[in-house]
Amino acid sequence: MTPRRRSEGGYTLVELMVVIIVLGLLATGVYVTWEAVVPRTKLNTAVRELAAALQETRSDAISRGVPFSVEYFFEAEGERPRGYRVVTPFRAGGVGGLANSTEARFAKAPKALPDNIEFQSITVNGQIYTKGSCEVRFDARGSATDHTIVLVQQPYRNNIFTIEVQALTGLIQFHSGEFARELPEDADFE
Image (cartoon, rainbow, N blue to C red; front, side, top):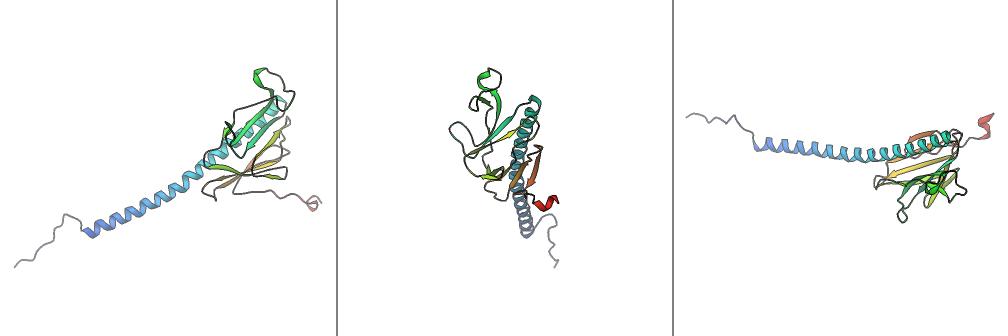
């Protein structure tokens, strides 16, 4: 009697199941990683766009020798989206020249924040805003209203980024997470 030989050309069911399980685990890991990376990218893009608008506003104020403003809106209202817009010192309606009043200034089209990105808070000269709207100013010397903008991404509450605009220089700094600069004390100047 000759012993039976096992076929050498195939895989067993157990081997195939192990391969399928390993591929499933790898796919799950890739999906989880992708879900973590893509939202962070959207937040970073929103931060860069806002910072670019602030830098452009500061540059316009310096080059034209007149103050410009940026308005922030926590909620959408009518046709205006939740986001921000630049307000120039020039008259609206394409007439030219400087506006005589705040209401007569030309405001650029509002820039909407992405759907899942929102302002968590905006601190302007020490006052914290969490709803409504607020306005900051960039003057002709390059200085600005001291303010920080905290952006958060929903539903990922840990995706937070802070943009800080320094008052004296108008320069912009970025901080991952929520950031608040500590005020100097008298002892710091001794």
